Image: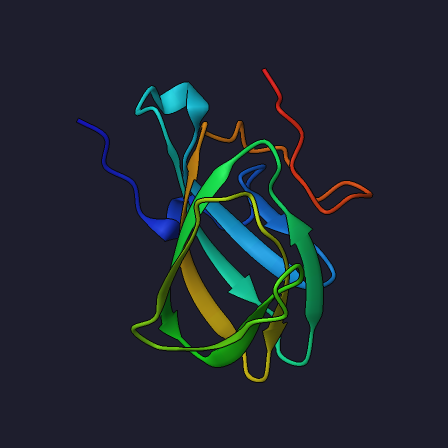
Length: 127
């Protein structure tokens, strides 16, 4: 059994703080679950281009508001507490936060914990 508390993650190598977001990586590839699980904070007033070409991601908003824009279709979906979205087609998108958003994210294949968005908005596959 794996039991963790976010307080154990804050300030460690599994606490990734970037310009537009901060991610607490709670479960990673090394945990052997077949997916990774992150608590990610999207910073207020930001817009982030993302394309997870190597991963599938499901996201559940537990606090805050914003929107996701699917670039190819131009569809825009509001996000607020209780909203789930799943990027099951590797959609290129913009994620915008009108207030600080707290998101619970699941990635498959699992992340190692060191990933940050590269120049094309994706996470590379790392071992």
